[in-house]
Length: 494
Image 1 (cartoon, rainbow, N blue to C red):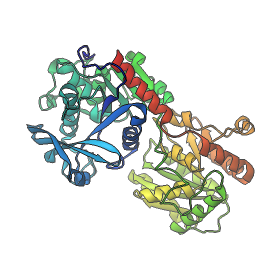
Image 2: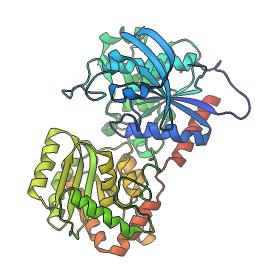
Image 3: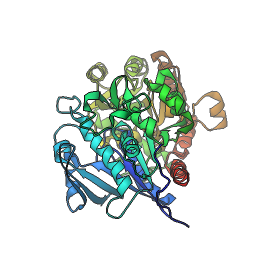
Image 4: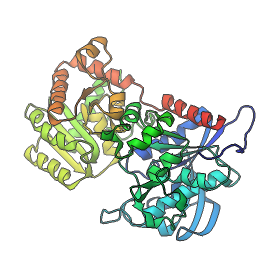
């Protein structure tokens, strides 16, 4: 592990300084839950005596952030072109923006080109991000030096590798796995352009089946490893979920822990949400129905529907189990339910849901793409939301749904298992249910869960009690942020 023995210490009460290294951060640039987590942590950690800054690429999509930003580092030429770092405070987040136009100023998505393929130089784009994280840890920036580095996912996976290779005293580093399915594997011939030490291209370093692996390198070099739910931490130790890295994680098991994600409860607040048709709370649940009517109108569905309205807000992929939803939904639609979807992804799934809407034009509404305001309206207007994932590190959709009294129907895996209390007979009697779980993951078991949801929906009193339980369930960051702050402080003290 890196040598931290000479890292500067202060005595007495202090604010710990932390640098998050991440490829996305809400509300600035987002493709998934990673961005939400990085942004929310950056805003909330101050409540736990942690001063957080976020190192983030200055993509074309967020070029406006450079306006009135302050240059705090100028590297000249690095990783194939000019590189600067700009400091900017925006939306409550202290940003360090990596201004490298040759790597980030381009069209398309932040990871993919306009043809939907990985940018061929993603190794350089995120190698630079990782290298800068380690360099700021080593030397500081603009008179500020972090006490802890926090690298997120494969895009920042080389941060602890570079820190370890620097030969200098560097802060300890935590690596968080948000989704182990994405590992950042590249040909070994790219070692030179990444300024990696060939001596570390070994089984105990960043070598993975003859390739460079950003994530595997980070798992080997980080001081601690976290992931985004306790159940997912256990699942990662198995071949079914470890995606080939279960051996590495078993070897580092003593340093692995699961800290459950949360959501920003100010952004997701049905009592004060400008994006929904009618604000409401657990005490005024009857008002929620106005959002249901607005949602049905938004999708051109019959506003006189009396059955439950199911929803999906998701990336459309096999991982998310949405092929199972396509198989299960017709049975409940035929019994009076309705369904709306917001998302995009695999072509076959997009086609499948469009076809479902054509088969049930007055019961199914589909919007391919993403619209943040519509996502809020769906959470407020639907009765239940489906998250039938084959694996799910944590999941945020079910947390937002519970906050809005929209009952989640989830597979029993990862963070879904950790956050939703199944409405079985015992939980209903104990008045603690918050949604519906099913498992193992199959279309048949999803159908059974949907039928249970429909049955409970007919019992309005029991349904509303479950809605109130869900709305009272803690889904914010307080508990998890405290655990993260404790992890930072324990690393600094060791």
